[in-house]
Structure formats: structure tokens, C-alpha cells
Amino acid sequence: MERLVINGGNLLKGSVDINGAKNAAVAILPAAILASNGKCTIDNIPDIEDVHCLERILRSLGCNIVKIDNNTLEIDSTDVNNFEACTDDARRMRGSYYFIGALLARFKKAKVLLPGGCSIGVRPIDQHIKGFEALGAEVVIEHGAAIVKADKLKGANIFFDVVSVGATINVMIAATLAEGVTVLENVAKEPHVVDVANFLNSMGADIKGAGTDIIRIKGVESMKGCSYSVIPDQIEAGTFMIAAVATGGDVYIKNVIPKHLESITAKLTEMGAVIEEGDDSLRVTVKGPLKGVNIKTTPYPGFPTDIQQPMSTLLSTVPGRSLITESIWENRHKHIDELKKMGANIKVEGRVAIIDGSQKLTGAVVKATDLRAGAAMVIAGLVAEGTTEITNIEHIDRGYPHIDNKFRALGADIRRIEVEE
Image (spheres, rainbow, N blue to C red):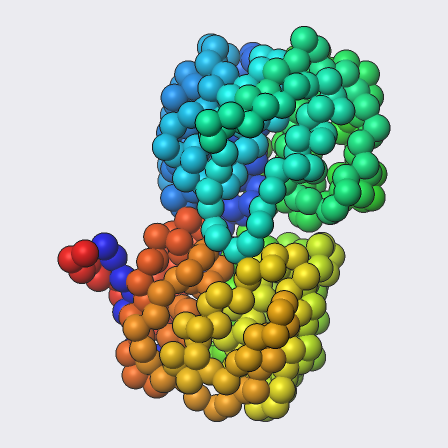
């Protein structure tokens, strides 16, 4: 088993390149199955464990995949004839549910093991099922798998009961090859929703309105291969922004879309950080004292739920009281107990974390309870006095490519070690 060992106290200085968006890539790769003719060449893919899982699932379905480099895949799904994604990899990761929409669209049937991923609260797929059924599919959950089939898919008007990124993307994928027009309302507007729609359109889909309140999909008869580049990762960028502020550093964050980061930029600026925007970069510095702020996570363009855990680390080091209200996932404060081991003064009441900031954290052995909690622990280790050891780092590797190498290049004292179980 591997651990991250961090000796805290170093200022971060230099530049870091942000990888492609995990949350876009994990939907785009399954959607490549829709190309019944030609190859999809997809670049700016993050080199993370979730992507490696998806590669293995695609191969199990019959895709021919050529790895051009660590961030570029060529996927030929012309000869795919298997509609069952039932490997251990499918069960292991949350994003495997996108295979339901992709296989249903292409073959009018799918069998996919229900997914895992991070344990951050109840993550039902009821809105996915609602959308598939509205398109004309029959859905049965049996022996831990979703079994979906339809004689044909027909466009429909679908209003989601709650805003769901996963359901928005999955039903959008399924509707691309449905007869007629599908209208999705109360949809998610996150940048990766727009990116998946752009990818599908590059393959020949007819999707309009992604990023707005209503998405309209006019079904097409078939889709073809294309070349596509995944957008930069909003969450990885936000994590490095927070780390720069937490250490009082001076960091250029490159290969970003600043507009996607506006809610994070606004809160860090409110705290007292200085953020200078370029066309595709940000410079993050601290030139004076910081203060606490109140945050409520909401769907895009609000403050991202995936960033609240790293932000809780930063706020625990800043004088004054801060409140973080988690409105998306009910179980996303589990990392607080780990921060408390390092001296953080945080109390959780329901979905609200009450943070009384202090000037120091101290090194300890802590665990990554989930992906973004792991990033929070890394930032805590960077600012803590002494040595921090982080266990369960497989969670971190699911979403942050080579996080130790990137922070070491900025001046952090961080290394990966192997320990016996």
C-alpha cells in the first residue's frame, strides 16, 4: 500500500499545468461507444485511475484502443457487439453508469453493474431511470446490475426532479440516437456537461442548449468518430488555487478556463488572496492577512461541492469563524475528523461545518476518506508543522494525476512511499 508523506511549511512557488477534466473524461470515454463508424481520438485526458478503469471496461466491450500517449487515446468502437459492462471495474467506479446511456443508445439494451466511487452520501440513479423510461426503455435492477432495454427509443420531454449532473449527461447520451426530439429541463449546467455535449456534437449528434436551463436533442440515425480535446479540470485548478493561498505562495496555474473558476476566485478574493486572470491562466498570491468566509455549495455556477473539502482545510488555518454549508451531498463532512487530528477546530451540525480558524495545524497520520477529502488532507499536510502521512491515497489517484510530482515541482516536500499492509 502506498502513502503520501509531507513535511509541511514550504511556500508553493512556480507554475503548474492543469490536466483535462476528470468529470468530463469519465463521461466522454463511454460515449465514444456511440461512434459506429470511424475512430475517436481524444486528448487532454487525465492520467488517473478512473480513466484506466474505463479503458479496461471499453476493451471488455470490444473496443480497440490505442494509447498514443499518457493523455491521448484513440478509440475504435466500430466492432463493439457486447452490451454488458459487468466487470469489477464497472462496480468500482461511479462513472461506469454512463455506459448505460451509451449502450442503450447504440444497442437498445444494456446491462451494467451498479457503480461505487466515493462514499459521500446517497447517490441514487432514480433520475437516470426516469429519463431512460421516458425515452421508452424498461429498467430493472437485478443482482446488483441495471438491466435496460427498449424496442426503440423515442424523444420525450423530461423534467428532472433534482438537478443532477450524472442524470443530465446520461439521458443526453441516450437521447442522441432516439427518434424525434428530446427536451431536458431542470438540467445541470456544469462545464463538463457542456463538454460532453460538444463531444457528442463532434460525433454528429444534434444537441443545443447545454449550459442553459433547457437542453434539446434532435435524434440522429448514426454517429461517427471525431477528434476532441477535453476541457481543463475546474476542480484540480481550484485545488491548486487553494493550496497556493494556504501556503502563502505565488503560483501560476496554467491551462485553465478562468470563467469556470469564478465562484472559487470570488471566495478566495473575499478572503484576501490576490488572483490575476490571464486568457488561460491564473496567478494566485497572498499579500496580506486572510479572513474567514461563509460558503454554501450549489450547482454550477455556484460554489462546487468538490471544492468545499479542500476549502475547509484552508479556512481552518484562517483567523475567525467560517461556515460551510453542504447542500449537495449529506455525507461530505467525513474528512473533518481527520482534520481534527491535526488540530483543526471544526464542529459539524447537520450539513453545516462551523470552523473556528487557528494559526496552525500539526502533522499526523490521517486518511483520505474519499477523493476530494484526500486533496484536503494534502493541503493540510502542506501547511502543518511537522510530518503528515496520508493513507488510502488510492482515492486521490482516482482524480488527481501525479499530485505528488506536481506539488514537489512547486517546492513542496512530498513523497510517495510503499508500506506493508
